[in-house]
Image (cartoon, rainbow, N blue to C red; front, side, top):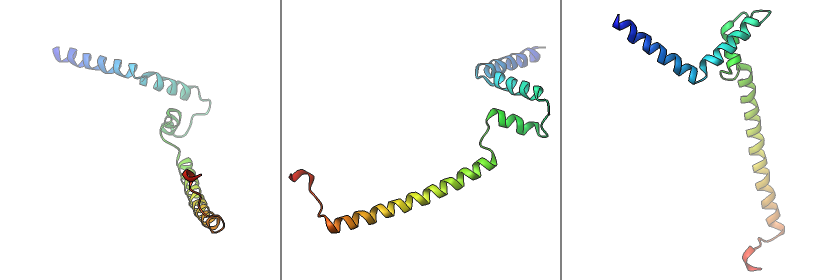
Length: 101
């Protein structure tokens, strides 16, 4: 009987921990949303992940990766253009020392 009480005490501590961390509330809200869906999704786990915000969707992740690559290329191109323009400017205007004026 003592084993039952120790186990129950650990369960109660764990339940309080989950409640304090907001896990129970979040899970309850997601499960209620799933229950209230008029058309149940084919994959309940995906529904739960989506509503809990677990990581970006695969399509979102891929599109963000492509956008990052595109922006990185544009950044590199603009850096190169900036360097080229500075060099051209130096041909026509000698560098000015800021402290000698």
